[in-house]
Each structure stands twice: as structure tokens, then as C-alpha cells.
Length: 253
Image 1: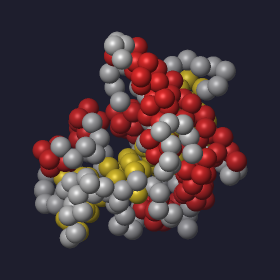
Image 2 (image 1 turned 90 degrees about the horizontal axis):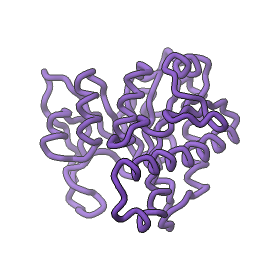
Image 3 (image 1 turned 60 degrees about the vertical axis):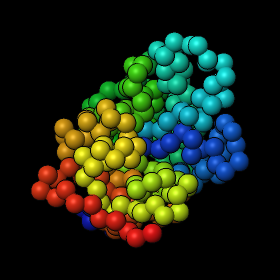
Image 4 (image 1 turned 30 degrees about the horizontal axis):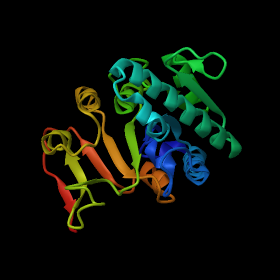
């Protein structure tokens, strides 16, 4: 299959730092999760997709939470940005071990380990088949990595923002706590906001709404999901902004 056969060719993949914990860690990085991510991205690139990635830093952040009580928000947020760079470097190495060419770009100057974020350079890397990892969030405190993902996705002209999680999509309630929770296959962004479904933070959702950027929330831990999604199969939940279609499609519990 060539890139022209894909429904989505250039994508921004948002990954959670907490997902790198695996199943039995309080903080740190599970090598098996890293390898699984690398294999999934490798398969997507092999299909012709251009993949950019934003990864959170929650797994690293958890290790210093107790030392941050009383710390100013801005200072804590800068520490969080450094945590995303640790994860970004770990993911970069995992991707390169499966023979992908990568570039790690940072919103904060770190010349020894990463390129500075330059929009045109990032796009050029993607056009050449390189996987680009965006670290340090937006480079500013008070903004989450969700917002960074929305911003970078718009800047590189991505077709869609893909949010890889450990559940199958967006549910009416937390499926890990409520067995009766129903999965949405398609839902309007305004309903996401009204229901407070926590797909992304409000700033990120507003950016996507203003630019009509679709978001797909899916289970990144299920092998092959990323490629199936790129090929146009119904995977996860599609958050859309089509004002002519405000209905939501649910899968019965």
C-alpha cells in the first residue's frame, strides 16, 4: 500500500507519558512499552505515513511529585518539560533500534541532544520519511502536552491528531471504573466539552475547533490499531467539528 492509499498520510501522534509505566511501575519507563510503540510506528511508516509524535512526561514527573509541594506552577511546569525530553530521547532510541530515522526537536534550546523546533524543518523531515518527536511541550509554562500536540499538529499541517491511550476510545464514563460505560464511535467536539469527557484539555480542544482539526482517540496498546486507523478502518473514537452532524454514535455496552 502506498501513501496515496492511506486515509491519513501525515499524522500527529500524542502519547501519554503515564503509558510508559507499563502495568507495575509507579514511575520510570517500561522497555516493553517503548518497543511496542516503536513497532507500531515502524509499521505506519512502512505503509507510507508521515509520523510526528508528542509524548507526555507524567511517568517521570511522578518520581518527583513529593518534592514539588509548594513549588510555583511555572517552575514545576519547566520541570515537566524536561521530563518530556527524557521520554522523547527514550522513544527516539527505541525507534532507531527498529531502523527508523528520527529527529528530536525541542521548544527549549538543548543543542547537545535535540534540534530547536523550526516548523519548516520539521515538515521537511517528515517529507523525507523521518519520524519527528516534539519535546518540551510548547516551551511555555501553563500549557499541557495536549495543547502542544494540537499546536504542533496544526503547524505541520497534519491530517488528524491521534491520541493513543490504553482504552478503546472515548466513553460515556471511565471504562476502568464503570462497566456500563458506552464507547462513542463518533462524537462532536462540543459534546465532548459539554460532557467534560477529558479527551484533551480545553485549550487543545479550542485550537482544534478553530481549525476544524479532527481528533481520533484509540487504544495504542492493541497491535495493528495504528495502521488500521491510517488505512481508514473504524478504530477508536473520532471527534469531529461538523456542525451539520451533531449526533453521536455509541457502541452498546
